[in-house]
Image 1 (cartoon, rainbow, N blue to C red):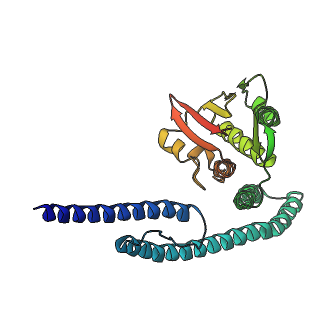
Image 2 (tube, rainbow, N blue to C red):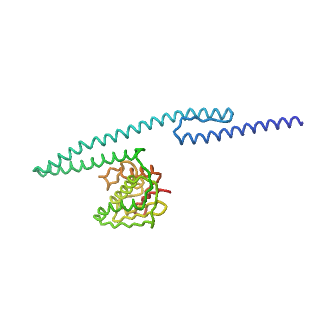
Image 3 (cartoon, rainbow, N blue to C red):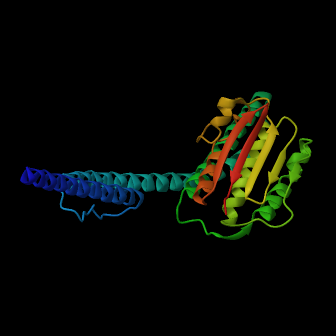
Length: 291
């Protein structure tokens, strides 16, 4: 009987030891898998334990990780080629567009019939839309370039004030008196100056398109900026899509639909977050740059 108990004890100890090795191996796999997925590395998963089942799982995961790295590299290469192609195309379009604008200017100086004048106005309208789209495409893919941003200590309050001042004339023309609330002291964050100005400018410009006659902006010491305005032409569905590329609502048909997409892209690249919400007939856009 004693020998039987000892045998069962040894068997239980062996099973517990095997279970411990298996759990340890699974923990190592889980930790290394998180690291491999978070980093662009060729390192496979290594195990310190010799459990056969854990090693079999690690080997299979290494095969899948190798395939995933290959797919990621192909995607990154294709994405880079697409960005370069669109950027070059947008740049190349500027030359013929400039020439066309020159010929249209000459044509305006000629004596034209009423119909010819109307057609010329239609052509100029289409040309303006095409020029805006070309510029926005160039700026969008420039914003997507990971090598462009230079982060340095900036005062959010100062940058926001400069952006508001640059839109003061446009607001005055529309009879909008902005309501501005800023903290007493500076709010310092490590950001790219040009990118931050672009973000604020695109958001304020978007507000002018959809504003029902007012505009408010609040900055707090935590680095959160909230823009709001009455927007009777919007609804919760269209507000949720404002950051989608090329999306425009009916009142913004002359827009390219890239302004807020660029703002979102640049905000995220600098470690911030941006979101839009529509409630009580108002559009709220919140930009947050945590310390």
